[in-house]
Length: 344
Length: 154
Image 1 (spheres, chains in turn cyan, purple):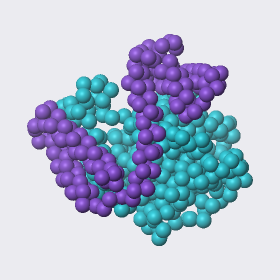
Image 2 (cartoon, helix red, strand yellow):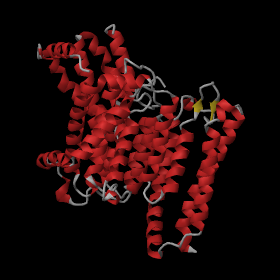
Image 3 (tube, helix red, strand yellow):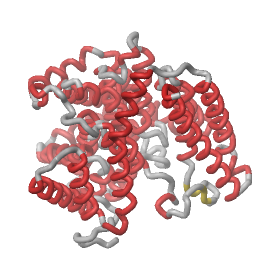
Image 4 (cartoon, one colour):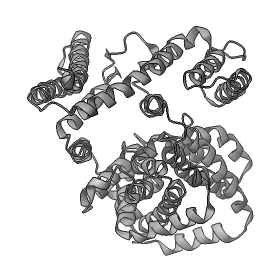
């Protein structure tokens, strides 16, 4: 199953020199900034810094772009936790419980939990991917419209469990969302529902829509509020508490591993990106939990479920990128340019 | 009568969604009535409308909400209205006012509504913060944005 000769060659390439590793920290910092600023995207960071890879060798460039992506996915969870505004769509579910934690003064723990889940999710996901990359690639090749429809249907049925006691309202919102998703040109070139706006020709862009939904609603919700955290003593950033939160994430290994597995497998499905699977993972955790009513009110398991899934998503996607290059996330599209640049 | 207001608010949202769905279905139908165009939109719109009708009937038959809770919600909605108006004005005037000037004015007005009365603080904060945001986004976003003072390709 595993080509050990190739593995040895890869390790040799990775550890023969330390110089390629020098770009990892700058890459993570760039990713963190782009992920943490709502409106900017990780793919944008990768595209902006792609020309820099022209001056790097393949290994260094690969590490640089991977570091940007990894830093970005965690970075997008920071404003989600602190301000209820996800930096990118991959951290939508992080805000569901991260923000209530922050409002209770547990922002340090929430950030730590997100960091722990993110780091562990990536590690577990990469190990599983390392073993299963071949069968995953083979199964991705067999994915057709029926399987894609099954994934969409799965998402729709999960809306019901996310909505709690308001199942019908949740379904109405889900179906209305599906309709909004069809705005713009269809496959046969027919234009629908753009109201004459050229900005909608390619559909409703996810990031501005997300900003409108989260940032604008939060702006209104915070009117008459002096501080996000009422308790003055709890407002400080405390490394000790962040570390406590980091370790707390490991108290829920089932949530962590399930998130990683969902992130990796669903991320490998063409057309399904991290924006979908962080919500899928969150819903999965909520459904399985005995105290599902505490989700959405500051349950750290919600943050763990989302963060463990979103960090590994693009790795699953990247693993099958070369097998099935169509319908990928923006970050993978940038990576395709990168591979083309090195004649891969 | 007052107690039913929140139920009516829910009904209003449902009505809005139903109207949007009907309008969108009509739009899609007018654009092309071929099966390739409507194969997805028609069933989804039909289900949405049915669900809206079902929920509306359920809401009308539901019990009235607690008076105190209702008054509290009403109060919070009233305090948000000026900010909603300000935000709408900011978005609608952005094109001709420019992102830079619009943002500075929006921040200043927002601070004023929130109770900030120190003129120096109002001017300095809105100017510095607005200018920084406008500069950052004009340089980082890949789309040209309307600006009054900052040079742009818009």
